[in-house]
Length: 293
Image (cartoon, rainbow, N blue to C red; front, side, top):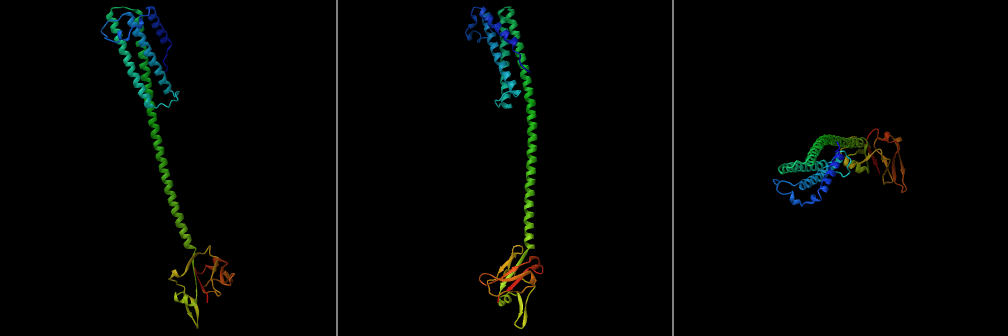
């Protein structure tokens, strides 16, 4: 959809030659033909009006070519569809003005009573070119409308994709939160499963807190139902391997297997309970009672 200019250039040259053959009469002041359209025109004025219209329509054609290039994507000016629409509307208004000028020129020539074949032929060509330009503008308008439909369709697709991405992101975020909650719950369960308790105290202290019973003539025994866990120290059996007693004497009163631990001295001569086999050591109970007197 390209506007052809070759025959147009020939007609423009012919118009210029008419003006030259008239002995320079085409240099008439603008007011001689821009005034009352009811006044008859001289041949020189008609020629000047024709040349002026040729120049205007030539400018319109160049603008149309520029719009075609923008619609074909050949322009790199970053023109938006809205700007192209405004340019098309402006050009359509200019073409309407050109057609009105041609009609006015034809009316004035008719009133002059002259039958100038050359002038009439040029006017007819002007009308043909205006019609061709209007057809091109209509085609560009249709193309722009179709492009806008495609843009709206793409925008809708992009919106749908964005919504899908948002939904997936939300689902992933929710899944992450659920996974984090589950991991936290698993960690808490794991901690509870591996939690153990130990206490270090003298004979009187252990009895006072209802940890042991008996004594004197009866053998000291550890109670199996502890209710005052605040008296015990909580620990993780996976990490608890050595328990310093800070005492010169120490013995294990609870029922841990004797081969699962040892009691040694530290550098200061104080006793240390060493857990050798955590699985066996804590296999019978989660409470360790150490007496230090």
